[in-house]
Length: 273
Image 1: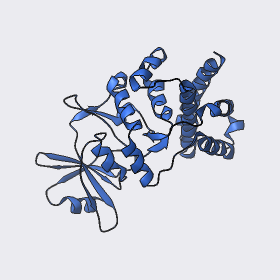
Image 2: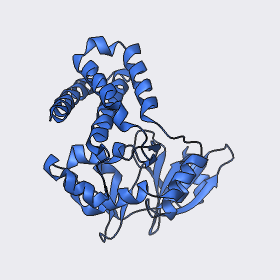
Image 3: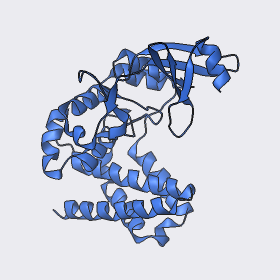
């Protein structure tokens, strides 16, 4: 990997790993220049850069072995803190992403197909059944029952580009505070925007402020918005429960089950109200 990067860069660059799960991202430094390099980033990156959603794409190079190396400008700034997620610019950036026809066209051009809630429900139900989780954990069965009950209210929505991994670590603020970027688009999908902003509301915004946040984002009508948010939060919790089980991470499984129980209680109260 390193020798391919060195070929792409030329002489005089110092390479250091940039962290991350894949180990395929590096920081390149030469004199006063710094670049963020990644192997086999999605072609989607060019449009994200043009739209000002990620730091500027400097160049793309295809190597002899077929790998594609991308270089982005190194951002002098910081990751957002959890408290920063209340910033109105987070809602504005999400609105921009969800309403971009350019991003949607590009994602469809590279083969990403829209995900309906019925397809999502069918997939998670099969995974839970195959792993015998419905009989093993009561809260898993309760959550699946809620998903089935709320499913009709999630249908016939406008499906848009969704980041699908919204957390404060993936939002970067430039040093001068003028620009906000959303990075790490490896899990991007075309889905209900409630699957994105539901994560922001659940983890960072007090429930009494949800309505105000949604107004800032630009929601103009109810359209079962809270039901849809809870539906995707339940699915997200079940999805990661399966993921941690397959990776044999028992501590994370316990953590996810605890989150799922809390979420079930919230949904139960909401439905009864």
